[in-house]
Length: 72
Figure 1 (cartoon, rainbow, N blue to C red):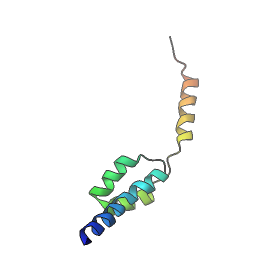
Figure 2 (tube, one colour; figure 1 turned 120 degrees about the vertical axis):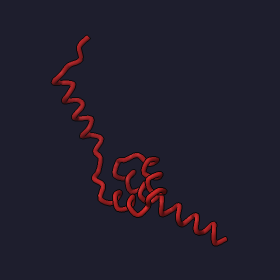
Figure 3 (cartoon, rainbow, N blue to C red; figure 1 turned 135 degrees about the horizontal axis):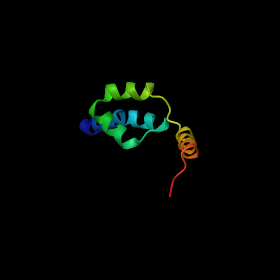
């Protein structure tokens, strides 16, 4: 019974960086793997990670297309 409890706690701690990174606009799966492999580093990394704005990236793509139109 203790083993199952420990597995649940460790899994929860390992997924914490993935949840934090997802809220900041990153992909869940790579961060979940990262959290399972090196949890202490991953949790710190996820906490100091900046937000990834999807609108900003899309705006940059639109500006690039306006400057250099596609040629047939």
